[in-house]
Amino acid sequence: MKLILLGAPGAGKGTVAKLLTALDGSVQISTGDILRGAVQAKSELGLEAEGYMTRGDLVPDSLIMGIMEKRLQEPDCAKGFLLDGFPRTIPQAEELTQLLTRLDIKLDMVVEIDVPRDILLDRLCTRRTCENPKCQSIYNITSNPPKVVGICDKCGARIVQREDETEMAITHRLETYNEKTAPLVGFYREKGLLVSVPATSSDDVIKAIKAKLNL
Ligand code: AMP
View (spheres, rainbow, N blue to C red):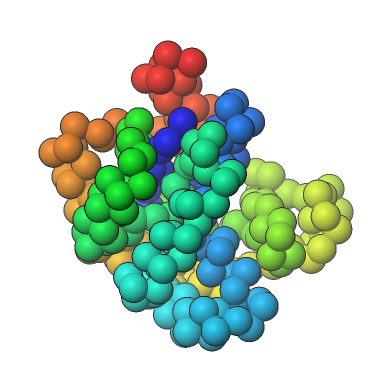
């Protein structure tokens, strides 16, 4: 399947993407994971992106488009992909439309995961992430803690609170979402691609996607 997952930070895009990959081998492409990996590796991309990310600002569209143009042409995307955290602005969405046309790729749909703000805030404040850039598994200290406190169940690395998950940065990220990313809902509705799922559980989102795709 070829999907875009839209939704505010904390809506569960990453969790839904991981569950969907198990259905048909489509790959999850998370621009946030790619950028965090680059920051840890101290690569040129990471050094450019770090300041924006720590503040909870979006990194410039040109950096993101460079990453995505390469990533979408890697062989593992042939089976399908789940775009998680991209596009995040109207210019990114417009460039993505052109890129997909050039690569002769057709999207199945764009899924908006719509979660109330109080739930988003609570999830983000209690979310913890594995610091291993190759793993980046997500936990929640109240609803989904690791078996051993502070240690990732999957790879044994430390789990940490992301620098952009302080209360101030979270508030800013949600404002940025409303201002820059929420307009994509209208953009994709006009193209007839939007499916909006008002949901607080990933299972509900998966059910809705499977129903739409007849899986
Ligand atoms: P995420 O893990 O998707 O919440 O992304 C974490 C941070 O990475 C965001 O707050 C942005 O600073 C940056 N980021 C991720 N994806 C994008 C994107 N498509 N455009 C701009 N910045 C992005």
